[in-house]
Image 1 (tube, rainbow, N blue to C red):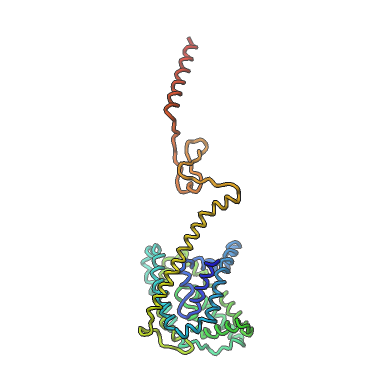
Image 2 (image 1 turned 180 degrees about the vertical axis):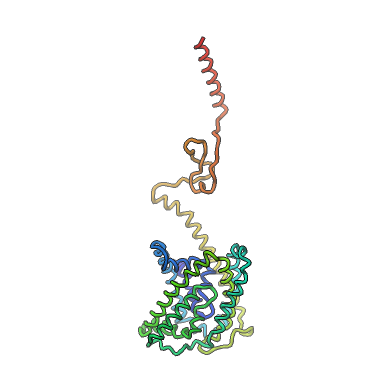
Length: 372
């Protein structure tokens, strides 16, 4: 539960900042495939798969909601007052994350190296989206407190497109909301709803409906690409992460009062290194989680045995079971699937051989004596 909370919290912080994607966080922490498959199973999965996916996403969603509320209430002003430090931090985060992602997927990338040009395609997509970004997020004059049917349809479509970007590493859903002119209006509506101003409830519900529809339409395609064209998809994702560096540099232009883009004189090396430290800490967290899961799997068999009152037989090297008296020994327990059965000749002691031989001669002598 705590692990899922931390994951969701980190995703929410990234999703709330233009230029950064929560999908990048999921990919870096090693649960992106599970995230995509769970979203898909909620819509298209069977009963058991849907139940498991819902439980997993609820745990993740609790952390996401907490992180998003914190971002709306507290961190928004921090981003505006220290935009260059925040931009430097996310740059350090992304630059250090790219080689980690490439290393984790090195086998698939090596096999699909002719498709490396997908990196350029991914970078071009993100840069293109950023170039059509408005200079500020003042919006289109939509009164989200008094929503009209036309404005509701516009918010619905924008939410569909934004959530499609949020599940892709490198493309920021917040940046797309800026392009649609809805970033600040939606944040204002969420902030008002948190303050129990229910006049903003309709626009928030319309936005949530658009998000759900976008997930149903887009996530299945992403899952299909990861399962059947993983190498090409990873190249594309890495390109998107590279392109997001340009989006982060242009992030100050999206403030209420637009600021100049990030430049060498406003770049903060300290916060850049802090971003690298955060990546290292997240990798350490992932390593600890993998060790914890391995230890849990090792202790699951004794716990199951204690409930049933019997211990499973475990092959430890010499223990084996005779298969129907054929003289072939088959391993018993977990090692049976890893080691083939082997033919073992029965071991007979020399004393037993001599006694058997002498017994045989005595019997022959007694037979000859009887014939005489």
